[in-house]
Length: 213
Image (cartoon, rainbow, N blue to C red; front, side):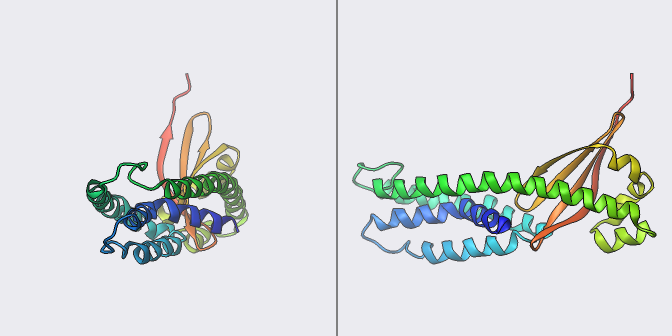
C-alpha cells in the first residue's frame, strides 16, 4: 500500500505537463493536441512501472526532466499564446485550475506522507541488513548475494560492530535512499534502491573521515 501511494504520487507530478496540455486543448476548438491524454496515461503508468526499479529509474527521470518537460512547456506556451480570451488562470479555465489544484494537494500530501513512511522503512531495513551481515558465517558471500555492488562494502564486513553502533539517518526518494551512518571520526553513506515492493542495498559510494581535536 505504501509503495502504491508513493508510485502514484511520483507518476502524477512527473507527468503533470502532459495533463496541463490536455486541459488547455479542451478550451480550444481544434483537437490536434488531444493526443496528450493517451500519452499522459501511457507516461503515468510507465513511470509507475519503472519507479519500482531504482537502478533503472534514473534513465526515466532524465527523460522526463530533460526532454518531456521542456517540450511540454513549449507546447503549452504555444497553446497559451493562441488563446484569445484572457478570462482564465495560467491559461486554464477556472474549473480546470480547481481540478489541477485539488489533485496537486491530494498527491502532494500523499507524497510527503509516503516518503516519511518510506524513510522509516528503509532505516529499519538497513538495520536488519547490518544485523544479518554481522550474524552471517560468510560475510563476503552474504554481500555478493544481497547487494548490487558488494566490492564497495568489504570494509563494512570487517567493521560491522562499529557500523551498527553509529547514528543512522536517511534521505529517501521514491526510487532510492541514502542511509547515513555517523560516528565521531567517520561517516558512511549507504545507497539503497527500490527493488519491486522493497529495498535492496546497492553499495557505499561516499565516505568521510574526521580528525578528533
